[in-house]
Length: 118
Image 1 (cartoon, rainbow, N blue to C red):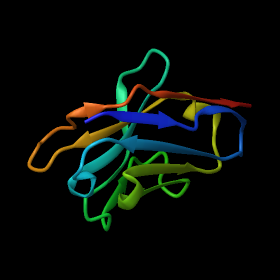
Image 2: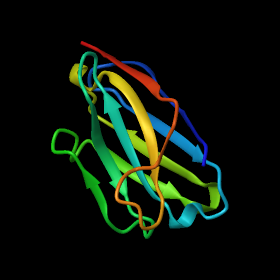
Image 3: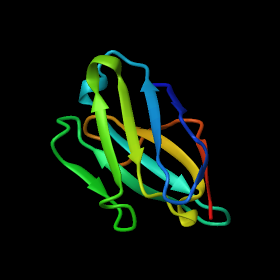
C-alpha cells in the first residue's frame, strides 16, 4: 500500500485547510484510515481515524469539533478538514492505513507540513 498526502501549507490562526491522502490498493474500502501528526520535538500522535465502514470516526480531544475526517472509497482517498486552526496545530501530518485484522497502522504516507501562524 502506498499513500500520498497533500494539502498542507501556511495558514493564519482561525483559518482552514483540507488534507487529502490517496491510497493505492484494490481494497481501499476495507482499510481503516487515520491521520496522525508530529509536533516539533514531540512523538507522533493520533489525530483522527475512520473505520472501513466510515460510520465510526474518532478524534483526539484537542481537535474534536474542529477537525472532520471523511473518506471517499470510490477515489481511494481520505480527507481531514481542519477548521479553526490554532498555532498548536502546527505539525507534520501523516495519513496511515490499518489493514483488516491488524492491531496497528501498517502503512504511512510521507507527511505534509501544516503551519499555523498567530
